[in-house]
Length: 141
Image: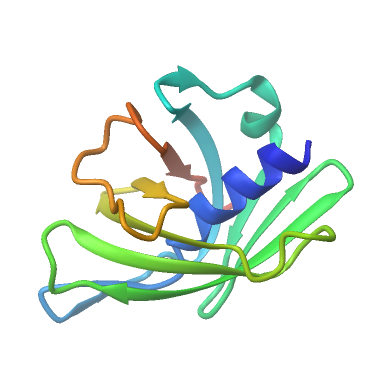
């Protein structure tokens, strides 16, 4: 469960606030994980059951009894946009964990690929190495 939360947490933190061509994107809301891969293998159903919540300055993932809060730095001038993430709050031993990645937002679909290896920022959204997640923004109720 800790591995799931770490993976999902790092992925989701990129969704906080993104900018493309100087246009600020509003990502605030609740998301559902619709697809994901870890080193080429599909993620388990547990990751899809978690709740992904984005506010103006934080991304929170709640899965079972585990909660992660992530911070990030985004370079929206890069193509695709680049994201550097760090776990701010989480289960023992996870705080301070960093990841680097790329992200893309089209409509209500957010794609992110990332690596825990600070030397291997992904170039593609395929999940063959590292992690890949596709999140869908839920409609306002």
